[in-house]
Length: 171
Picture: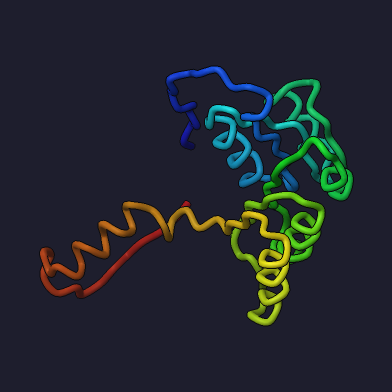
């Protein structure tokens, strides 16, 4: 098990207008990970989390502070005026619906993959982003990883010769 460690930053002062308040909807493995890494960015503050399981909400308060707003209803997060952006890390079939609702409520969105299950579902998400002008990002950490790009570069350069077999796993 890999232990997540915070990134060391040169700390600078941030004014109230420099702070980005976020909420996380879905506090499973990716929700916790995304919350942790988001908080490594200076000026980001986690103010609310949502999950259906009480234990996850209690754990979020243990990890991120007893004053953290917790709820089992994601709409309570979307209705908050003090939240600038949300991370959608729920079960996959909720990604498009919650992302659309969040952008329509004025929130920027980081949505875990997959964005949608069927291609035709994506049109509404894209249309909502265009209509609202909100930032919408789909998590694709491994696909956009420098390791993936370097692997492709090595393969295409034939440095390793002809590829005969690839064995891989992700955990």
